[in-house]
Image: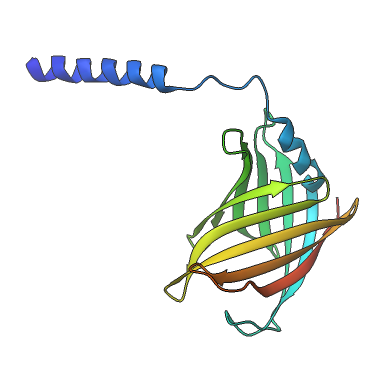
Length: 177
């Protein structure tokens, strides 16, 4: 009986703490999220890897992304495909406290990528930390709107402990729908 009472009190206390700890929900999505409207639709991506200290270049790649707002407009949902095969799902949001976009990707190889980004009217910069060959590195993805239906992108990397950025890939995105 004492265990049941203790468990009940713990659950009640935990529930009370959860209610107190929750921050008030915003009345609506951050206006910053509107900067992501450009990406809603279906996009064909293509590019090529570049020779760098991080690997050989010359590898061409293609893919398709389909982006849509989740109900409520707080998050942008991305489905990534190689051919007809789903290879990743990404959820993009905005952290109003840190004043950064968040980009959490889950891919078909079991990896999770956590990016943070900034945006202005026609460009986006995303960064993340990762490990490559057992060594920490920093990644940077720069996207530049080139028309109402296209953009270019560049992926750079550098050692986490310093050094110069090296371009590892470049490409374009073209809206199909």
